Image (cartoon, rainbow, N blue to C red):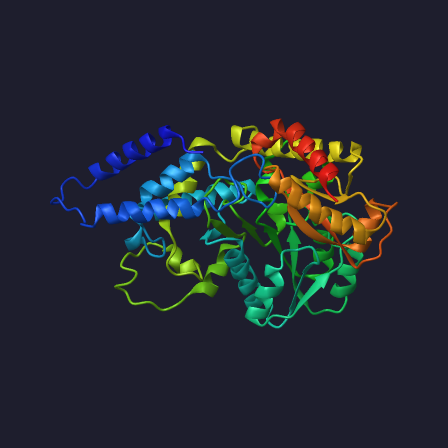
Length: 448
């Protein structure tokens, strides 16, 4: 978990940072070192009460450890603690953030997007829907029933009408149901989810773009989870088409703190048309923005934002450029391969019924049972037994009709079915699939 080399790299980086301020008179804040040491020991002990998120046997929620270079760069920048709201608060880190925005825009074929980093996908999506509401006032936002709940919550906060659209048997937005809503004439924005957090399913962007040409709505792509997968070589053909068409949407959210190897919280909002920046304009005292150059705070709803996030992301991009064919992209393909291998093995097991073939790196599977009530109870038992064996999974409530489409021999006698869910988002998972499957089978055999 702790690599001594990282501590040495951090020390060297801090020594270099300090050289930039060598002309200042010596100054060292005073504090009680012994008391601080005692508090830190207590904090470290308290932090032991966690799942091992960094380890390949954590195959539950979407938690991916930051790359060491991101962790070190973030920590190093905290000795300055820049604020990227205004250039005066973070000159170097603001410049780094702007470079990162260019890098992220290129993922989607955009060369001059308007955008900035955010505290996470929720804040980034809020900005996207806020802009949409200003451009289509009073009109509805619609999203898949499997889209992240943040969209309905944000719409409520912003006072925007919201409607969830049913999904098909592949957990993607039902295009026919979407068109029925569009025919009512009051839809201003359609949220397209590029990898929903339940199944990793990617909405059919090609069909939605065809609808846009007829009904004239705005398209916001929530790629918070799946955005980076456009770099992967191993996508299915239909999924590849959806990613290749992202350059045509109006706004995109991507979370570097998911597949981008960054610490929490690091989200990002991007707009294809930089002219939407006019909607952010606000009056601030000249002394607050004391430079004539564009400030990130002038195109953001957030005020203070950690410059450390930008420094960490910039360092990661320097080491692992987010481009097709590189080492970063290879890590995404490793996760794809791991998910598909585990899905295949689950299908060969006597204990599980895998549902959708994974589009990305998320697998959902039911516990084998005669009916859905028994399957739900067994899934909960397996979850607990697996945790005792050091394998950490997640539980998800899946609509009964969706389970029925993939587990045809199971009687559905409940509205939802509690299923198991695994996110194999660590590249190392590719070499741990056999062990994970062995632990799953052992846990199922030991369950009630």
